[in-house]
Image 1 (cartoon, rainbow, N blue to C red):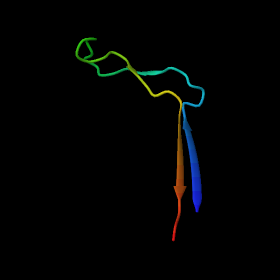
Image 2: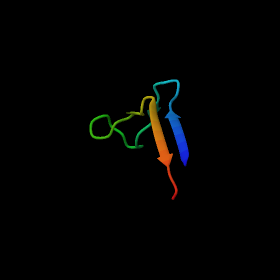
Image 3: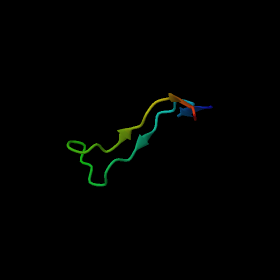
Image 4: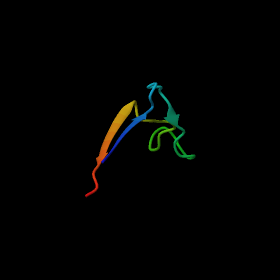
Length: 47
């Protein structure tokens, strides 16, 4: 049995991806907000 805990963006900072090069702010966003803090729990069981 294996248990795994993952935390992304542990300090809950706001950060952005620059988006596509041809962003015009209408059809394509110039900045894309990224995920806030999140947790993931996994349990693996081998028989």
